[in-house]
Length: 144
Image (tube, rainbow, N blue to C red; front, side, top):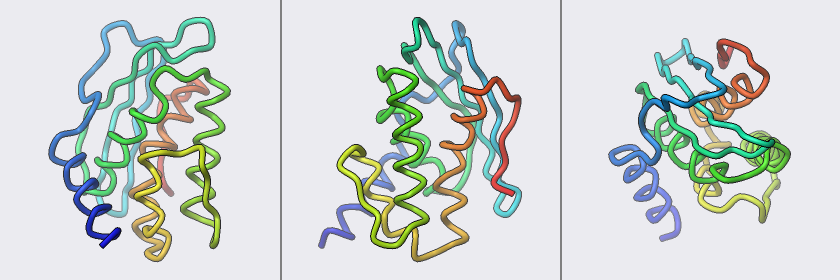
């Protein structure tokens, strides 16, 4: 029953993504690409005084990658850069380490089951790697 709820949440975020769109006042930007399945996103951040003031993304991909981008924007909007980096680390652990769980992530916990499908882990982490690239002022990120 919990799996059904998680699937519904992923499908809802795929169909109605949060923070979808470019930011005209972006201070950070990066493009993300998953060459295995063709997912491509652009991430925009407005950062002021080490805090993420606004975030947006554009692009398209599979349901998991688009939902992950949407949920990620909810998770990190309004956070300090340090808090957002910590959430990236927690999300990466959640998807790559058996038995890992965290109370720091809220909605992103729906991706815990993706760990069972290694190819889909790249879909779920694309937006997060693109976020990290944007913070490091790199132009692009890839899952390869």
